[in-house]
Length: 138
Image (cartoon, rainbow, N blue to C red):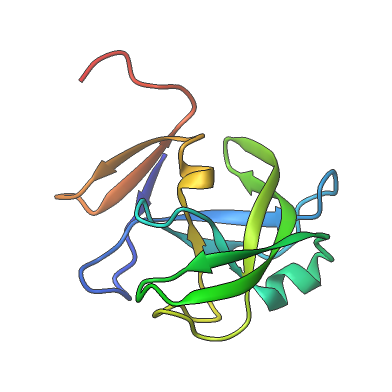
């Protein structure tokens, strides 16, 4: 399945559509584009999306952002629904305001989620391919 990069960013960036839910619940009706960010350790989700699905808080932690500023954050537990299946029980950071260039409209998928997926980024075609299994050879 080929998914076009978003052209709302410069340069154009890879995104995939996702739905969220509280653990074990059906996916929410709303589908959101999630920006793929291999430089982000963790996944960031706007608090308003988390409150809509009533995602449970798991714990607090300190993180360092883009400018090495230490911040206290709250982690939430969610299931992430993709076209190829469900990733169950992932901790995500709930973000309220704009932080380090993050807007309250976007979900950023970090390595805690990306490392579980088989992705192929075709930069020249500005497409992301979400694979059900790894390719045999390149």
